[in-house]
Image (cartoon, rainbow, N blue to C red; front, side, top):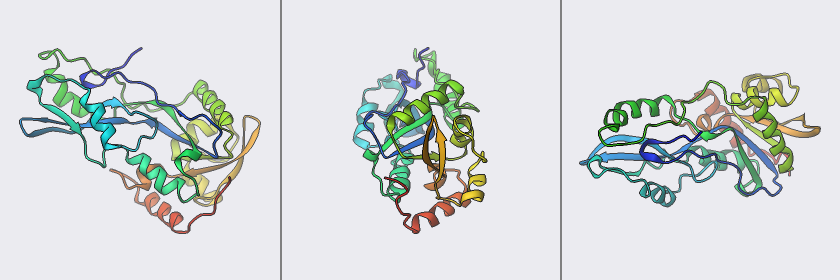
Amino acid sequence: MDYYFPFGQKLHPLVQEDQSPKKVFVLGVYASAVHARWKQDGRILCQALAVASEPRIFWDGNEEEARKIIAGIKIPRELGDLEPAGKNLNGPSAKALEQQILAPLGFTRPDAWLCDLLPEARLNSSQVKAIQSRYDPIREEYGLNPVTVPNRPSRFCDETRAAEITEELLRSQAGLLVLLGDIPIREYLNRAARVPYRTLQEYTNLYGYGNASPVEIGGRTLQVLPLAHPRQIGGLGTHSQHWHETHRRWESKAPQEVTK
């Protein structure tokens, strides 16, 4: 089934493009979207409306790319225009990943195979509210498409998806698996391996934050390193100050390379 954003862009999955062997495999939760600022007669109707799938997984929010994508979205002239949202609203998780996770470990993005439990964007509560208050009331009048991108689910990974991720992990040949936050631990790792923890806090209590431990997945032993989600790490929006500060302390110790 096809899903559509406001103003007609079709949702598409985001997967790792360069599938050559990698040193680290990063597993997040779900893909994000390109966000646009919607303006009409000089007024801002919405600061950040999700209007398209990102051009690649863990996109860094490149403004030139954002402008090109948004320029290709046609809206009725009477409804104003779209422009890239603020720099902190496109790609912030990718920046936190590259600068505050990969770099301290001694890796760069080309060293990493990136994956999400759910490889497509979903609408969070703020996006749903924006669509319901600004877009839906004028949709029929202007012949706009209904927004069919699903809302953020309560679960992101089932047994079938877990098996697909394991296949990707093994194909990547990475020696280190980085999990971003509680959800990949609970929904993927607890399906793929036998481990005595289900949350980042439980892992931290056992091994310490930022310390890797061996895990067998798909018949192969590799190091697993659960860390806080980029939202927490980068202090993005509503976030946990505890995990933000915990990760900053880990960064400041200049961790040795876990594996190469």
